[in-house]
Amino acid sequence: MRITRVLGTALLALGLAAGPAAADSSPSPSASGDDKAPTQAGTSFRTATEIEQGQEATASGSTGDYLYWSFPADTGQRPTVEATVKLPDTHGSQTWQLDVYDGLRRRQACQYGAQSRTAAQGTSTMELACVLRTVRGWSEPWGNDPLPGTYYVRLTVLDLGSSDLGLPVSTEVRVDSKDIGGAAAVDGSLGKPLVPGVAVKSDEEKDGSKAAVLSSFGSDDGWSSGWWSDRWVWTGIGAVLAALAGIGGYALTRGSGRPSRVPPGA
Image (cartoon, rainbow, N blue to C red; front, side):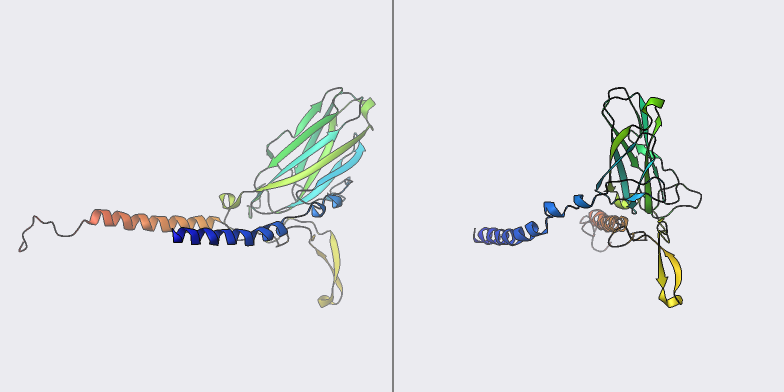
């Protein structure tokens, strides 16, 4: 009884001590970063507006425009791109499409999602979505696998009547990712993420020569491409369980030694 009371008191003390720390670590509503979300889109790959995962970017345009955004994706992530198009009150039938390209401007296939939809007359809002394949840390040069780096989002209308060309529209784009982890890990790593060299800085060590550098936006701890993944943890756990199973099987089949029915001198 005394042991139970002591354990209960200790757990209560730990809970009280951890409570303020957990409350202090939670982000405040003002620090959510929504105020920094972009409010415009680019018109080409070179002028694509950079957005972070979890941000909801907005932009206004006209039917017929090409709207571009870019976002970073790292190894083990499965990005989901969602777009909402708000159409004018009066319009004809329109078909919109959402495309995603990697850092080499290769169009990436969507696992699932309504990548292209047609809005009938009177439709005020249309939603599009594209769930990409899991980003890999390495791929063959001839492969089209998604690799870590920059990804481009292009939103445009494919089919509309001539009377609807140039009508004002507003759009919302959001990118989220699910961490798949070691289930999609591969042996090998990418030397550099597929991020375009959009900045040029002076290299003082090379007599002030100009050199293109990678874009700075990405994960805070750098790109995670490498040999390590949680697949190694599960491999170690499996090895330990196999060893324990072997020891247990040996202990069960070994018996207690010499059978009692055998004479001592045999």
